[in-house]
Image (cartoon, rainbow, N blue to C red; front, side):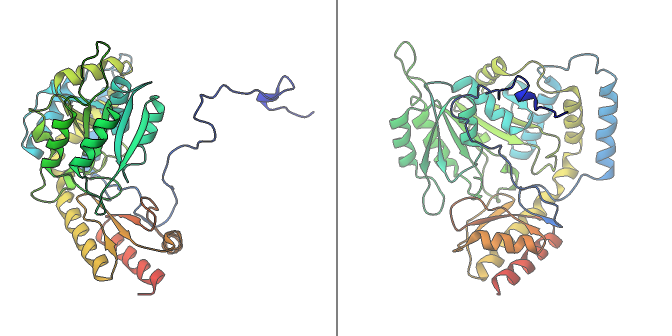
Length: 385
């Protein structure tokens, strides 16, 4: 007897009603390959210590006794602890009501576009930038517009103002440090954009002006070089500004999936309208709170990763490569006539980096000293110098 696929059980193939615009698309994702040196997705290379892991496990064990109940849907304790962390890290005092969190900064971004985007609205950004941004727009039925960056990957405030005036977007997404370039935005540039965005949003139903929501994505903010301020310092002046962070990078908690943002309480309340009920599980909340108790230890490697990054930038430049200034835990370098050949040559030598960004460029995450040494040795072999 011949079995029949479920989609052909009635003798004819079933055609699923895929939403228009999704035809032929494949899921997002960097290559996940089993090689000795993984430097492709900007993870913190240092795992939590046994003591930190034990504390997280104990917190999760205690939370598990209450899994018959729904979690705290507004997670007040976690919001308070995240606000305290930002006070220490950036010197900005925030109320718990100014904090929002979700399952990774990806979900935070989705909440923003669910609340402020949608059919007939536009989100603006500037390429090259994080490749998920247009996917957030697509998934929320929001039109995507990408302006361009300068030759050194910075932003010209005048060009941004012109794009705001032309498109009147509901949201502008600005990564700082930018991924994949590592470029941080000066505070003066963010101020100029926030000023221009105050009345640059879509026209309200009554014909009045609205603000464009300015989102500064600081997923790599803790790695910024000394003297580079956080956009958190501007929150008191701009109620249409939101600054997002994550525990995935500097905290070394990529597997936890906890992202968050800081904004005016009125903006945060609008995100609560679109979030799914109980979107942060009790186990996620417990694990995040435990990790925050150890923030000193978990953040202890940030300074060494900064130093390793700066040394890597210098090493690449000494060998004649063009390297973008980086305030993140990765470095964009080039230029190569055939970057895929270089990427593949490194892979053959057990080193996985990322083939991303403008043509001719490659991105390498900052690893341990041993991983960086392996990358350098492999690159010299591939290039013959």
